[in-house]
Length: 519
Image (cartoon, rainbow, N blue to C red):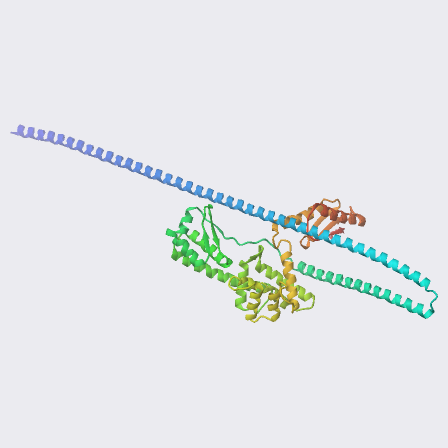
């Protein structure tokens, strides 16, 4: 019985050991399967991450390519704009050359006519002198033949002849003095105007408002037009201008007769393009916002102009109209800057002849005020300006200056003539109208470079808008006689190598410098 129990215990132990071994192997197999599953999961996640990163890299490369393409399109659009600007500049230069050629032809015809008239007058004068000599010889012969007359008759006849000759000499003397007085008056008036122009040396550039708007891509044209044209119709209705969208790449044109409306439309369209949200309600909002900004800018420009010329007491409506002139050009000259220059020149001329300088500046500043309202009222700008100034309580001198600064009426106040003179000076100043700033600077450089070519010249300066050249000669290399020869040679070089209106005064100054240091 004991052996059976022992045998059962041994068998049970063996079975338990075998069962334990089986269980351990089974658990080890389960652990291996879990590890393989986890490894497969890790590999799958790594593959998914790699695919996602590859997609992100591809998207980033595509975005960079799109940005590069956009930059290239912007550069190409900029180059097109530069080419168009150069074409316009060349057209303007060609037009200026043609106008100057026509002007030279007219001047040549005038000179030929003047020479012909002078020749005829010289021939007539020679003929009259010969006839006078013949008559005097005849009278002398007659006196010899009549020597038998008594003393009283001969004296009376001689006195009559002397009286006639004295009357002719007196008339010639009066004419000579009259010409001298006219020349003196003209010289003084010219000196006064030149002095005023030198005192107010304003810089000029050829300004012109533009209605061309650059767009980032041609796709923006479709967004500006909108579905069935609703966006462009809303924009044109709000701004009062025409929007021209054609096949020109990268450009939208804004057209309108009112420069203020055109500027509002230009700024509003730029804001819409930058914002990207283009629909009727957004258009109405941005146009209203831009209109308020432009109105404030106009009022500020008018106030600054009045403060610059030191004019106080102007009606707010007149200040607003002055500000509108900032957006108006005449022959490419900004009308507000032109009015400010005319104001200063008129004030200076008035002070030189003993009149009221501030009143002269007031007349000059407001003389073109009618150009700010000539689109809204009938008539020319002188009449419109005079009516506006009279309505807002300006003095009669100011009203008359605005009405008559183009010599269309009889001048009643001296300020009107001064304003007309200053207006002509401002319009004809080199660089103000028609002549580009580059051409004006080039002419100044040519004057100085030609003078610098001569030996003994240290420096050369073009002054008075190119009407005078001041040359500094080296005192060691030149004397008085040499300086005079240099002045004459430079003037001859200008006549041979340059084409210019009027005269150029060449002034040569010999300069000696002596420097000592006090220690």
